Length: 459
Image (spheres, rainbow, N blue to C red):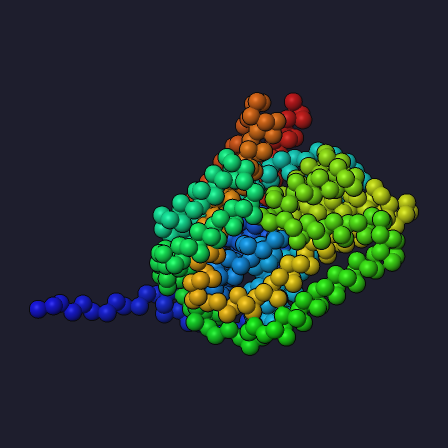
C-alpha cells in the first residue's frame, strides 16, 4: 500500500501578510535615502536595493527584481541607477521612475561638486587624505561582498557557474571587451534555452524556490499595471520626449556659446559615452580618459585619478566621476568667465551629468513595457539569465581590480600596503561575519585610515 504523506505545513515566511500599498511620498523618502547610502559601486548598490526592496520592505519579489536587473545589465549606462528607475516606474508610473532615478544621482552630484571645489581650492589636505586612505579598503571589501551575494543568488547550477567562470577568464586573462562577453553569453542562453530550458529558467531552474522573503507588493504573479503595458504610441511618445530634451539642451548650449565651446563639446562627448560604452564605470573610464584628458584637455591624468578616488568614496554610481571631470574642465576653461569659476564649474558638472544619464531614463521608460511583457517567456529570459551569470564573473574581476590598487598602490613590484590590507581584512570580516551596515563600516574604516595617516605623519 502506498503511503500518503501529509501536506507540508506552510513556512513562517509564506504566512507573512502582504505589505501595504506604498504612497509616492513614502517611496520618494526611500529613494532619497538610497541616494545617500548607495556605496560600493554597482554591485554594492544592487545588493543594498535587494536587501531593502526584496528582503526587508518586500516591495518587489525576487523574480521580478531579477527580471528587471537582467534588462538593466545589458544596457549601456549605470545598471544600479537604471534598476532604481525601473522599480520606481513600475510602482508609481513615469514620475515615480524619474524621481527614483534622479534621487539616486543628485546626492552624489552635490557631494562631488563640493568635494571637487575643496580639491581645486585647497589642494591636498592631510585629514581628507587620511579619510580616503581608510575608505578605499572598505570599498574593496564592499564590492567583494556584493559579488558574493549576487553570485550565490544568480548562480543556481553548475552551468551558470561555468558561464561566470568563463566570463571572468575572458575579461581578466584574455582582456576581451565587455560587449563581446555579453554577446557570447546571450548566444549561449539563446541556444541553451532551447536545448536545456531547465538550466536557464530564471533562478537557475529552482523556480519559485528562489522566493524566500514572503509575499511582495509586486509579486511573481502580480499583473502588469496598465501604465507598464506596451504600446507603440507610448514608445513613440517616450522616444520623442527623450530626443526632444536632448536636442533642446544641446542646441541651447550651441546657440549660447557655439559648437566648439567647452559646454557644447561636453554635452556631445558624454552623449557618446553614455550610448557607446557597456559594462559599467570601469568599461567607460578608458574612453573618458582618452577624450577628456588626451583630446579635450579638460583635466590632467593626475586629476583624473584623483577624481576616480573621489568617485569611489562617494555614494551613487561610480560613473559619477564624470561630474568631477566636468567640474574641473569647467573650472580650468572658465566657461562662465574668470569671475565665476565655481558657478561655471558647477554648471559644467550638471551638464555632464544630464547628458550622461538622460539615455538611461529613455532606455527604461521606452523599453520597460516590452520587458514587462516577457514574464515567463524563456526565449527572452534565458539569454538574460546567461548574461547575469557572465556579469557575476565581470564583477569579481572588478573586486580584484579594487583590491589590487588598494593593496599594491605602486604596483606588484613594490611592497604591499600592510595597513590597507589590515583595514580591508577587518572590513571583510565585518561584512561577512557580523553583517555590519555600509555607513558604520565606512565610518569605522575612515577613522582607522585617518588614525594611521596621523600616526605616520607624527613619526
